Length: 180
Image 1: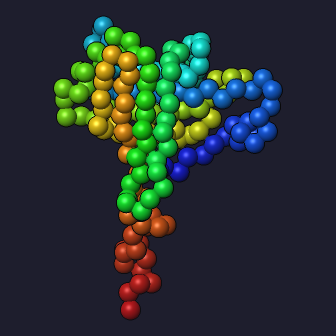
Image 2: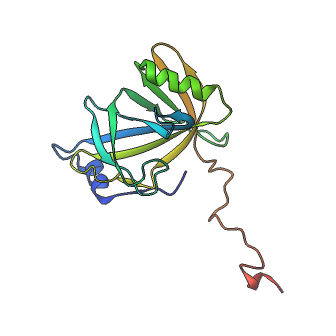
Image 3: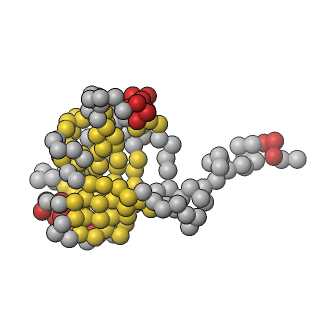
């Protein structure tokens, strides 16, 4: 998993749960087959809420970086990975009550070999000038299934079990003290 840094405001919202402060969970789906009417790359952006929000993306966002974009209301949920020792954990992502537009995008993506990339960004209802996690969490969706009611995909998170710690490879060029 990338080293994600939660902003101080969202850490406070998680810890204290102040009245009137709502954490808005957003999801962005990207794929090379997702193009708009003008032939430009586009993304499907949804918020787990009853109303749409306009929020600013982080400057490093792959599409529309640093710009204000709209997230449409949508029911989605995550099923957290099981705790086991089998390598990379997988997260189940479920989008309920899907629209025909979303099904069309997903079917276009499934006809190719490229994976769908999902990006999770939390926002605060009082601060939509940037996500409260920078960098946001990026996942590759696999095993995607679509029916008339929902889209289900499994997202593989980074393989933390097989990753070196602290993430450096000790070579003689970088660490000359290793040579006798």
